[in-house]
Amino acid sequence: MKLRFRTVFQGCVLLLAGVVMAGAQTATTAYQPKFPGDPAHSDSEALALGYMRTILRAQRIYEKKNGHYATSLMNLVHTGSFTRRMVDTHRGDYTASFRSHKDGFELTMTPTQVDADHRSFYADEKGAIHGNDQGAADEHSPVVK
Image (cartoon, rainbow, N blue to C red; front, side, top):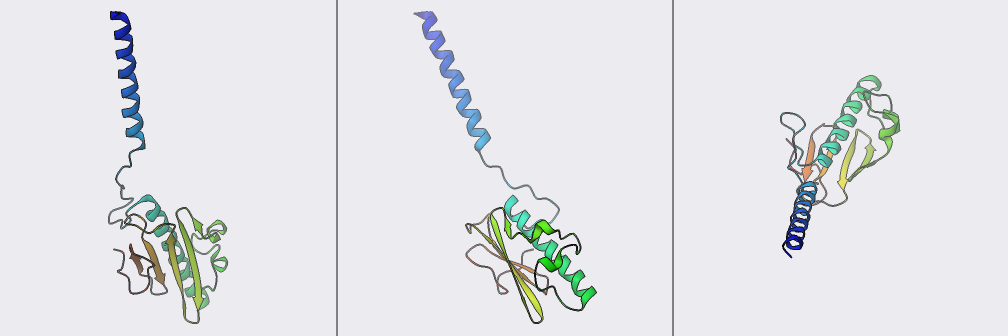
C-alpha cells in the first residue's frame, strides 16, 4: 500500500511538472525591440513597419532617378532593397495596400485584427508613418515615433 501511494504521488508530481512546463512554453513574452527607438508593439508590427520603410526608401530612390513616384509595387522591383517577392501584399498578420495618384502614393498596412499589438499603418510620399490601434490609419492618425 505504501509503495502504491508513493508511485501515485510521483506520477502526480510529474504530471504537475509537465503542465507547468507546457504553460511556460505557451505563455507570450513581452516584445523585444529590434533597435533603439523601435516603435513596434509586437513582432508582427515590426515586420509591417520594416516592409513600409523598405517601400518608402525605394520610392525615394525611384523618384530621384525618374522624376516621379512608381505607380505600382512591381515598378519598384530592384529599387533599393525591394525584391520581386515583396510585391506580394500578404505580409503575415498584415495586408498591404498600395495606390498611386498624380503627385504621389499611399501605402497602408491593415492587420487581420486591430488591437494594441496590431495597429494599422498609413504612409504617403511625405514619408511619415502614421498608426492607429482603433481602426484604419490615415494621414490624420498619430505619427509612429
